[in-house]
Length: 100
Image (cartoon, rainbow, N blue to C red; front, top):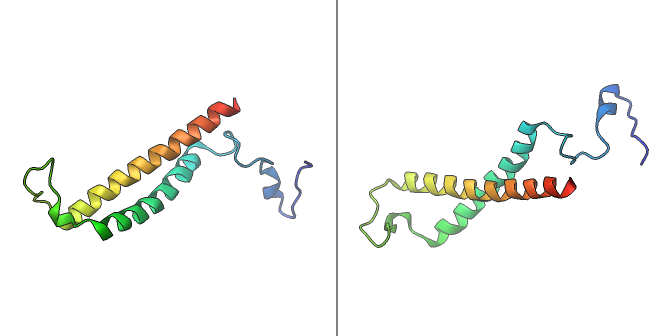
């Protein structure tokens, strides 16, 4: 594929393959994982709490948690975000390992 040329000389330095592992700095690759994970954690939390009442949570069959509802929402969102981001990071890691 021939290199692209644009009217703006600053854009000529863009790589031909933008998803190559060395094309983006580390921080940008992290954001490419965290942002979609953030969005999907919000969707998953909405789906879960349509079905589950956060005031009825019990810890391994014991008494109900004394947490405020907003704390339950926040902690479960962070857990969902961490799990989805970990899956995305592992996928990225495996793709980098496959390339070489």
